[in-house]
Length: 392
Image (cartoon, rainbow, N blue to C red):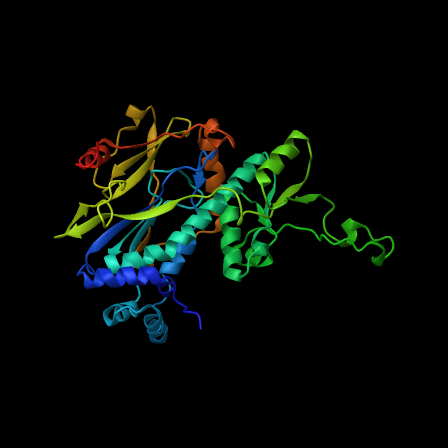
C-alpha cells in the first residue's frame, strides 16, 4: 500500500528530521527560502507556478498510524519522530509569489517558517512541485511568445500517467500561457477551456458525403507540435508563414527550460528573535536573513527592477531607482497550516502571467540572448552578506 501522506514519501527527509529532533533542534523555529540559483541559458524570465498544489499538499491530513509504522520500519527513524508525524504539520506558515508572476534568479520564490522538523519535511514535499510547475509554466510562456501570442493548447496533460499529474501539468501550462487543454479531466475539474479535434481519418469507412465540419469537429486547423524542440518549430513556422488556428504543445512536461531550485535555512529563532543563518551548515553561498522582494514600476507600470530586502528593513524609495511605485511580490498563503484564501482559479494565474510579461522590458522576453533583468540586494542585505569573514 502506498502511503497517503506526502510527509512519508521522502526517506532522506525523514532521516534529516529524525537527526534534527535528536540534536535537540526539533522545536527551534526555522525559516526556509526557495529560490532559483541561476537563470537557464537563453531564458530572460521564469513564471511562478505550483503554489496552489504545494499549499494543498501541506494542508492534507496527518498520516495514519499504520502508514507511519510502515514508514518507520522501512526507513528506521525513532519513535519520537513517529509520534510527531502522527500529528501532521499544522504549525507552518508559508508565503509565496502568486502564480503567473514573472520571477528571476536570486530572489525568493517562497518561504516556509515553522519548527525545524516540520519545515524540513514540508520543504521536501513542495520542492519538486514548485520546480516542475515553474519549468512547465515557463515553457508554456515561451511557446506562447514563439507563437506570436496565438492560440497555444496544452496537449501534454493527456500524456500524464495519473489524474493528479495531468491536473498539475494542465494548471501550470495554463498559468504559463496555454489558453486551452486537450485534457478532459483538466477541463472539467480546473475550468480550463477544452480545445481539440478528432485526429482520426476514417476515409472510406465514413458515411458518404459526411464533411469534417458536420461530424468530426470544427473546420479550423489545429497543428500538433512534435513534443521536442517545440520553440524552434514555432519560430520556423513563423518564418515560413505557416498558419494555424492553434498549436498543440505535446512536450511541456518533458523538454525545454530546466531550473535549479534550492531551499535553504536563512534564519533560526533564538530567544524569541530571528537570527540570520547561511543554511544549517553555515554555507558561504547562502544569502542569510528572512527576505521580501519588491518590484519597482515606472509611471506606465513597466517593471524597472526587483530589489531583495530584509523582512524588517525599510524598502528603498522608488525615486532612487527611477521608478514611480513599488509592489511587494509575495503574499501570505498559510498560517499555522491553514490556507488564508480559497484556491485561486488557474485563469487568474494566466492573466497575471500574460500581463506580467507585458510589463517587462521587451529585450528580457527575447527567446534567444535576452537582456538580463535588474535584480539587486538592498543595502542591508549587502551588509549582512559581506559580514561573512570567509568572503574575500
